[in-house]
Image 1 (cartoon, rainbow over the protein chains, first blue to last red):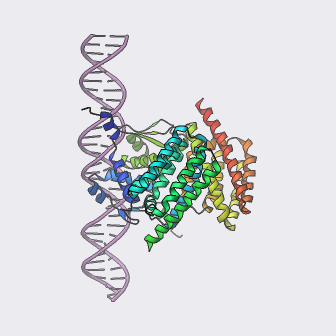
Image 2: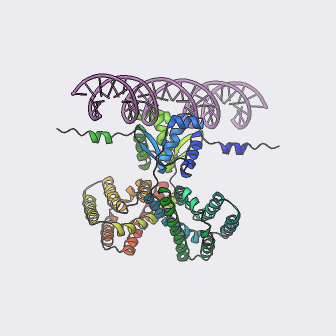
Image 3: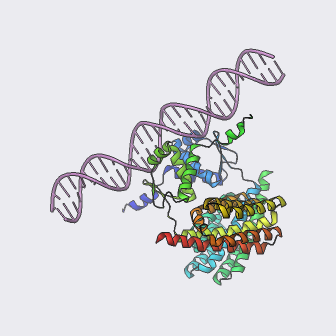
Length: 225
Length: 225
DNA sequence: ATTCTGTATCTTGTATACAGTGTACTTATA
DNA sequence: TATAAGTACACTGTATACAAGATACAGAAT
């Protein structure tokens, strides 16, 4: 058997990053609810580490806006209001537009093929699988577009904004009535990108996001009642 | 005499935030140069605190992209390349466009007056003061527009992106030839916002940023030679 | 009964100690 | 002289100890 040291090297992650990812997921998936306090000792015991990595992870969550720091009191999970969601989606829409325009300019033939494959994969997964897998396939499709922009900062921001609404997107994807439209929009986007029809592509992307706004807001209203 | 306890309360800042702001400024102003290592003990001694607040500040700088973490080696100031600057400005342009459009919709009479004052102040400071003050007056003008968007997330991102190019904007403002155009653009922006002429306003903002791109890139090229 | 005060405790904020890893320098050997 | 190995040191990663502020509750005084 061939031991693969390289993989082990790359798999090294400081505890703070493990904690960061863990807490992040817990918040985005709703396991840690808005308003809930994040107490260091308690978390440290739960995760089997000391307070130091916990604190450093919380510092990063703070900067991402996922937790709210109250001086000398500690951190709590930030509220997610309808307003804050609208704000995120407003920004996201502008950046998605930018992304698709840049992609029209820069995409390679190889990447177009990747997009087509991802769209196929998405369609296939829609039929059989659970919501999480569907969400991942959708993310993958959009990731290809992001990557084609060749703008590192834009990619980072879009990923971040996307994750902010993770749990709402999942809810939204639970409604199978929306599936045919999603598939159609994916195909339209590919076609327009392929032909470098920026305006058309932008239009579809806008519609794509606007639909999400409606759906996400519905989910939030539901949860608050 | 009336003692103001409230102010004292609000002035409390954890050491980590003091350190964060200090290091951030030092990086953005170029006092800490790209590639330079940030060694914890050294910084702790220099700033007269322990390693803990230093580390927590570095975690935040890491997430902002201002420092690069190398596992088991430590932090160093992130490189600022021409490409990374173009990327930032590309995103910033899209968000500035969004901001000015939202502002057209939402701005109040009171805020328009504030804008006019800020533009006046800017014009006045241009004549007498040093570059830092000019830059601050410019930032203030744009902050009013940001605030009028009533989108917290957008404001946060724009502030962040703006600070990323702090030192280059300062360089750019050292050239007095550009001043008349800046003043004219400010006034045009106000006029279009006032009349809610979204397209026109967007156009000026684009031009405003495009000018900056050229200037910033020039500065970077100069510094690298 | 209500309010104020004092105390105990809980939590964060900060400092420091300890372990492990990477790096650089020195020394020995070819 | 060049190269390789070994050793010492420097720095990060993690844990823990200590200080100080916040909170909650109990008891006393009005």
